[in-house]
Amino acid sequence: MIETQSGPTPLISVVICTHNRADYLNKAIRSVLDQSLPGDRYELIVVDNASTDHTRETVRAFEPAGNVRYLYEGTLGLCHARNTGWQQARGRYVVYLDDDAVACPGWLAAVKEAFATAPDIGVVGGRVEPIWEGERPAWLSDDLALGLTILDWSDTPKFILDVRREWLVGANMAAPTAVLKEIGGFHPGLDRVGTRMLSSGDVYLQKQILRRGYSCLYHPMMAVRHLVPRSRLEKRWFIRRYYWQGLSNAAMQLIEESPSIVRRASLAASMVFQLLRSPRKIESLVRPVDDPRAFTQKCYSFVTLGHIAGLLGALGR
Image (cartoon, rainbow, N blue to C red; front, side, top):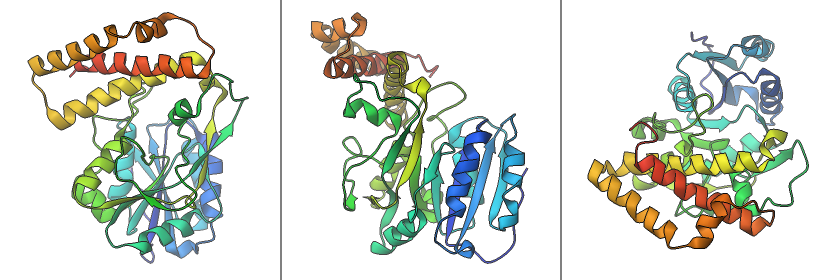
């Protein structure tokens, strides 16, 4: 179901994809409507990804603002919801905001400014600050905190050249609609589907944009605050999160290289061999630890384990 709105063509289309998070969604929408950019310069599209809660009623309450649109995407999966968003967007630029995030003042103004800085910008993103629902654990290092979608690369704008080292996140990311159309949007083989913690659709998108000769810009003034639920402040969540990161890395590799079964087995064997060569890494998989550096190593070892599993068919590919 698609509900449209007539009127002047906006410069920016803000897209919030949501699944059964109506209570969080209310704050996300309000933070967009409170932006300083005039309302006729942007539209807000909420993509309801097969929700069964009161998402539709939540969005309806904001429709009198005049620039709020509701879309329903029945195929479960973040990639499908994000693609529905840009495909139905009327703006020149599409900006993604998570349903459990709130845009900081000046967010949309920073998006507008960023795209005005250079003609070849294919994607721009900014700072993501945490909203801690509980106390930050002592064992949580800054490196591991990146898995919570916390991002702060610089106090000044900078171009991202290698997404293996620095990247933007889909919780706070924008791209020209034409560029999204050129690359085909988000790959359907990546990102969340229900409780599956597959990720990296945003990183893969950035890779595709860079390969086509566009630039990737980090702009710190394009800032949002993102919820860190209490349930994610447990070691078992991080272990699962980083194991799935390994699966996600394998999924990207399979998409990019399309290796044969023999090649996949060879790659997996090489990773197993490297893991076995380090007793410290093997021990880290099973030994309980509280030291931040040791726990970081433990999670990184689970990334390797997930990558191996993904190459060997754990993703059903």
